[in-house]
Image (cartoon, rainbow, N blue to C red; front, side, top):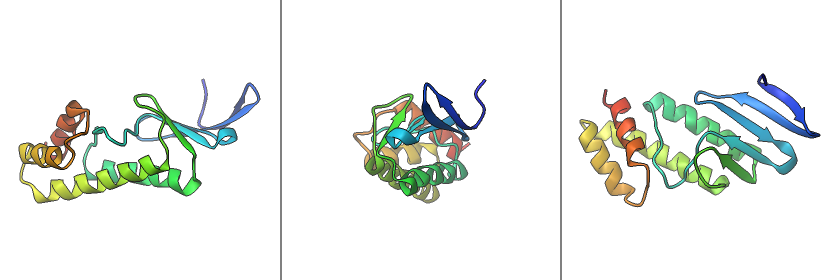
Length: 132
């Protein structure tokens, strides 16, 4: 079992950090981080405003650390521009949720503002969390 913290495997240092979703793995040697999901043009499962804030803080830490590369379980390699895009999306999700009355209105408005985003099933789940 690998525990959170610094570990060396095959001569390469990794830093394992537990997150709300799973684990982040920092790889300082290549200035990269591996995380569960980013998806700059894909909806994410967001379990309400508090969860969005936690995601924003995590992505902000990537920006603060200046990673060149963000690797994920479910998406293509991304970078800090993509992290910034996702932060903007998450902030806007919270704003939309505060302005609409129910899950259907939420999904309609998010779909209108992000028509090219994939992951409709993730948006459906997110609506369920914001409007239980």
